[in-house]
Length: 263
View 1 (cartoon, one colour):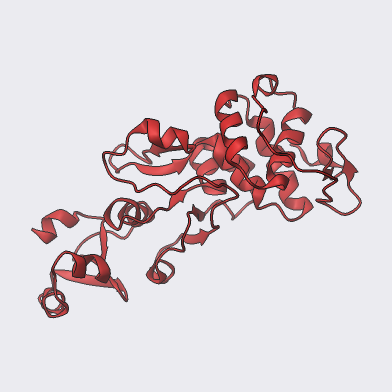
View 2 (tube, one colour):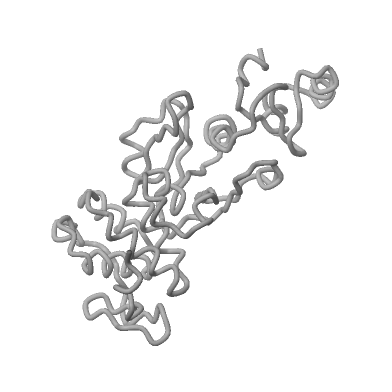
C-alpha cells in the first residue's frame, strides 16, 4: 500500500510516516528489506524511484502539506523568461512561504539547489495545498497550478504578476535592478486587475515602487488599467541605489544607465 502510494518521485518524511501509523521499527524493516531508501536523513522514497526537484516540491506541497510555493525568479523562469535572468541563477529553485522548509531539503543530492525567501513581501494567509485546491482560490493569492512537463504532476507556482513583485522585493543592488528591468520590458501581457490585487496585498514599499516605476518606464499598455485604490506606496524617498536617478512619480532611485543594460 505504502509503496504503491509513493510512485516514482514522491518523498515521505519521518514525520509523515509517524503520523500515518508507521513505527520507526517498521520503517527500519522496510529499509533493510530494500523497499525504501533514504536520500537524506529524515526522508524516504521508494527504492528505484527518481530523485527530481519537481517530485520534491510536489511531495512538500501535497504529501507533507507544507505551505510553500515556487515563486520569484524560478517561477519567471518556468514561465519562459529564463533568458532575462542572470546566468547561473535561474537554476536555484526559489521557494516562498510562511515557515522554513524541513532541513532535509538542503541535503538532497540534486543538481538544483533550493532557496527559501520567506513571504516575499506579501501578507496573504497561507494556503494548504491539496489535489482538490480550486484554481479560483489559488488565483486570489496570485498562484496557479503549473505542469512542468506532460508526464509530471502540477506544482503550485506564482503567476507572473506575483512572481515579478516577489523578485522586486529581493532587489538589493543595481545589478538586480538591471535584471528586473529586462524582465519588466517583456511583461507585456500582465493582467491589470491581478496586478492591482497583488499590489494591495504586497507590504514591501520598495517592491511596489520599483515595479510601478519600471512598468511606467516601459509604457506597458496594461499599466493605466491597474487599480491603485488602497495600494499603500508609503511616504518619502527610497534610495534603492546610491547616486541613482530619482523617479519623479514613485520617488525611488533607479540606476541612470538602465538603457545601456537592455539587450
